[in-house]
View 1: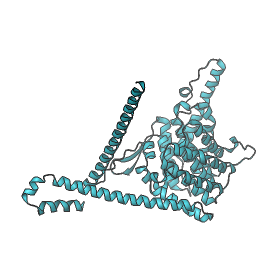
View 2: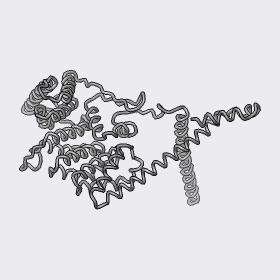
View 3: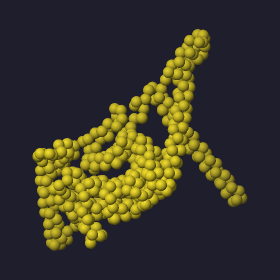
View 4: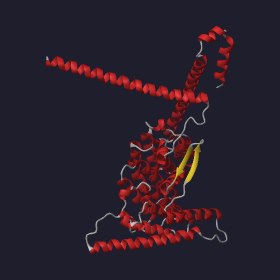
Length: 448
């Protein structure tokens, strides 16, 4: 910016009046040349930064092959920091398969710390790549090992990390309902082990693990579309979640409350509005009426428990902050059950117009889960990650905080990019026309 002013002043004071008459566009030329110079400098600096990041990324990948566990742990920890600090899409697009392979090896053979870090980096890799074939591959390749962790019930921290990873890679990478249901079933077997395959081994998850599992299950429930809902198939899950509202642990109660609010929002308790099955017999009609009565009773039970939790007294030694958080959450759930309206939340992520708004329990659950999983990297990803922009419909004005000169550089770059694209398309069209003309000419010669 200072350079621009200096150049303009030099041209005005150094030449005669006649030069200025023939150089009427001097100011524009000066800004244009300075913009080009600044743009080239910024491009060089950005290229240097990317090259430096690429070099460091390669070093971390090399360290993941080391036999010493502490070296792999350090590399995974550094990668977590890198994924949180930057949206490394350009750097990992062509290296994700190598990274994923090493992450899975760490989940399979590493220490507790290494497994937790590898689960986290796997989820961060999927979020960085966004929805598409690459994240689908991450889900496919990692799920088997994650399911093994969940089925063996190792250390609780490993279980929680595996749950988080499975939820995130499925949320980002799943392309159909069956893939989502497979992950939800595995998570539900942690929530309610008696419903799992190992019926002979009765396990009871401790509160931190139970709360994490309910939250992970709820995240995937947000992706279930209306045409795939069947009230009767959700009855058992909703009944069990309602029982968790009476759990001793506050985090479990709050996780169950959010999941149930989502169930109300998705109308999973509304029999006649959701069930479109024709009733041909009196027996079928009676069965459906009984289901309706059961779900109405369950609704009333949940409404009463939610109201009580919104009014819970503190008592001596109570954690006032967590108690207030519980009251606030269940008050919002109670209001939603009564009115059907969800309180709007907004989060400023950049400038005047960069605001993330959520207006449903589905969006609220997605926001809270991703914000927790991304940690300090949430703001950076909310600003620059296309996946989050698509999920929350974020519209970013990239020129909002730029100076006039920087805006000209940015817009000039955009115009240059559009021009290059049009020129490329024009050349391709010319090549295709030429090839077609040659083919026609050859056909005519062959006919003669």
